[in-house]
Image (cartoon, rainbow over all chains, first blue to last red; front, top):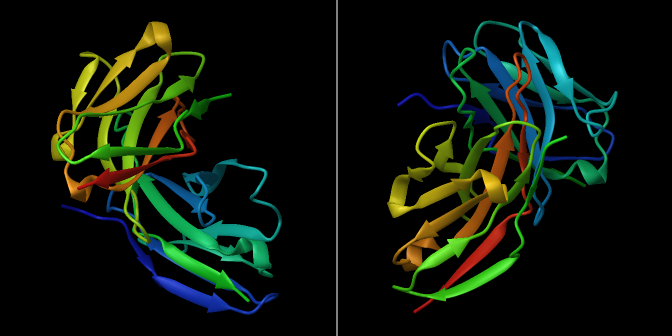
Length: 114
Length: 115
């Protein structure tokens, strides 16, 4: 069964550094998402991406964040200058075409900002 | 705006006992509803989903959920809990949207299973 994959599984970085989290969505999916989960808290929506542009973003997704689909397979989340409060599990998700309603989540990347 | 409430932060049941986890949602139209399970340090596994049709949906691992429009609820049930069911359970709602379709999650319910 096709899966969403994410790399790395864990990343430790220093405050102020840039990080790029990578995701490979399920092939032929058209809608892509990033969510985050701060330890012990609920999963929060960050951004959705369709047709090579952002469809919707939350208030969390400020100017420090950006997303990109640089080629036909990868979907990346960049945090330009990490803060301590960016420490969280980041989940990528993808969904097929309109009418295919299930979002498939990746295993997550645990980001720790020191 | 869509929202989800999971009233129970923590539930403890004995192994073999029945389980019901509550979920109430708020959305302007018929939503898409999901239950996910998360083991410590792991990702989100989809248990079941409701889009339309039969309001009682069956999922994996013996779980089922019932959509009740009048109560805006989508409670998760299991007749006999196993120790391996101990985990965090999240209810999520997603509205119909052409391009976005973000999911909104509840705060989660932590399930502890007593031997």
